[in-house]
Length: 541
Image 1 (cartoon, rainbow, N blue to C red):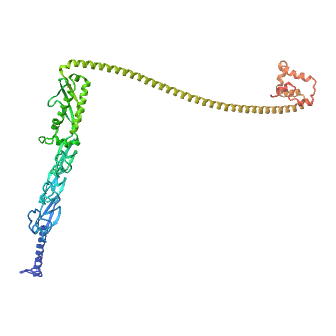
Image 2: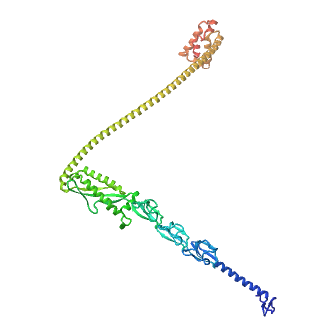
Image 3: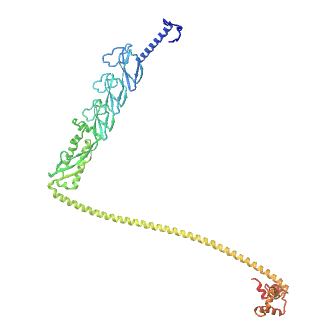
């Protein structure tokens, strides 16, 4: 509403006494009607909406329609004379949003069936056809316990049409077998058999292995049969005794280890189980198979032996072997496997125990001595064989060493020959080098001697020229040379006219006093050396 302050004016279209004009009333009425319409629409929407949360379901019930006929539990889906039947509908609405007219429909929302992980669900239908005579389980469309089961999980179902019961699955522990008794099925063709055929009502030949099995408890009953090894004490509850052929009592003590054959577990269960013990058949197996069979075999085999023979180790061993052999064979036919029969003691008759025991002791001592002798012989033979083996090893080692040494000697010989050949080749090379060097030296000496000879010839030629200057007188040339060399010291020489030096000069003096004869020109030319000794001494060799 618009307000005017400080003024008495009335806004246009508004009367101060009558309120809003006609147009204002229409707008206000339209707004009110729209509000009521929106409220009505929301109410109708909410009334028609079905909100099914997750994990829930809704069962529909039709309000209008034909009445259900006698025997009907649920409204059928088909129409009759163009009209539907009223009542609970067979289907359900799972989680989601749906729209149904509440004038014609009503609904109920509830949780779905949640089967835990360690359970199974058995469906019991409340609506459908009646079961035929003789039938226990219902097929789809029939009323009763359904054959199919539901495994762990969440399922939507109509609680007006069916119920889901929780049951435990069949758990078979390790070492057990499950014997199945079919509660619903065909009648056996032969009612006198122990085990029926597959699909017939009765105990099935096939058994269940260890593990978890989901089976309908209204269809199959499973009995657990322990197939593990167990031990039965022969002295329980009464001692195991029997009479020998000569009337003496023998007491047997030990145990029988046995187990149920898995392939025959069903047959054993049917033949020996008592209702008073439930599914347990251990006591029945002991009382009906193990104990009577053992006693029977012991009495039959024991009656074939005398009391004295039970002191004989070989006879007792044969008795135990026969007991085990016969007990294994007899129990196997009845579905029981005998694993072992450990006999702890066989108490022979005490009336003849002392003399027989002494004799048996003597026989055992003799056998022990014989075994010791055989053992000594065996040790002797073994020692000889060991020495032969050691000798063979040493021979092989010696042969190996000889072979190694021969190989090494051959290798060393080859190495020495190779070294010698190398040295010979080096010596030959050196010899050839020495020969070449000697030849070179000889050639060098020849060349040097030739040079000396030529040098001498040149010097002789020079001397010849000098001698020819003195008319071929070599002595004159020598004196000239000597005087030339001694002229500087001549004064000193003359101061002493005696002595060897003066004798030397005396030779020159005497030679000068001799008459000079000129040598023939031809002879002087042919002579290689001067005739004067002084001159000869000056010539180099």
